[in-house]
Length: 384
Image (cartoon, rainbow, N blue to C red; front, side):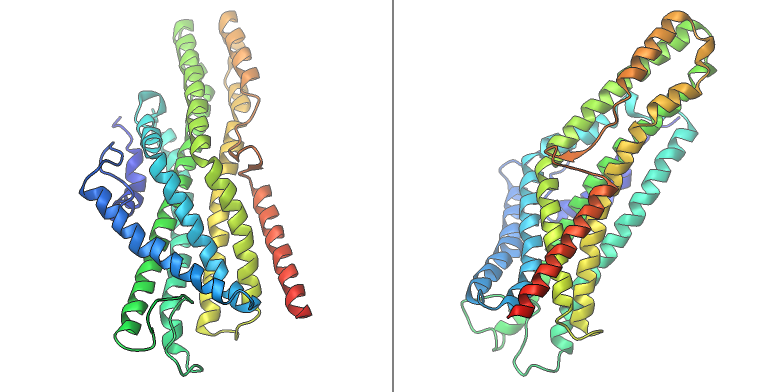
């Protein structure tokens, strides 16, 4: 059977990150050169520059609650992107090593059935990826259209509130600034979507490894001869150890990203819901904010769903052992199988510094927290 190409599933993510200056070619990390210069220019012009202008503007409107909430929910996500970019660059070598480990023999599917299990996981990942991508770029589209369709304001409006050291109301400064803001938000969205879906794909690959291991355990009895069964069991035990090692490396990469992600997502969803109550229903700005809120919700759901899948699939190991015809195995194999089953009782949980676990229960807690933020803002706004 041909070698399974894990990277083929995420080639679009890698390509888009390469274009954005965030994925050096091959197995390389960042080195002084043209590509590092490209990354520096893109991040400075379209991420840091855009964010700086928004931060200054928020300082000037700090006494206006409605105006601040109208800008701060976007700024929060941009700050999160800066954080993710920093950790992506810092852990580039580890991330590429995680993808390289998947090409080793232990992590390869051995049968057509195992490939089908992987394809099922990838199918769900692609469905969520497309949904997240669609919601994110719908938000971008509405951001572009809103200032053009808004007829209530006489002055020229920009997609985002930001401060600039020149008059943006006159040509060609207005057009240049408008294009820069749109280019910036498209760049930020591209980076955000592809980093998040890449991380989700790694978690999906992690869950697929437990599927492969469980399938191998279920079929231990299909081999003839005690030596063959013993060798395959030893191979399964080694595979399990390597999966746990792989998971620990994933945790190291994800720890701080997830912690900040959970905080920002809960706050951003609450702010966007509050802002929706201040807008004219069915207006272009309303749909823009609705797309934003849905994109953030899908984003955090994606993290929690695939983390939850890893936990569930790792918990299937004891059941997979029971399903094989272990009663006919030699005594020494039974002892090894029992010892392995006892060690595999504990499920694998992906977490943010062991404070928050990636699970559907955590997703529901984040949504409840977002509602609490929304209710608080409503109360404060009502008092004013």
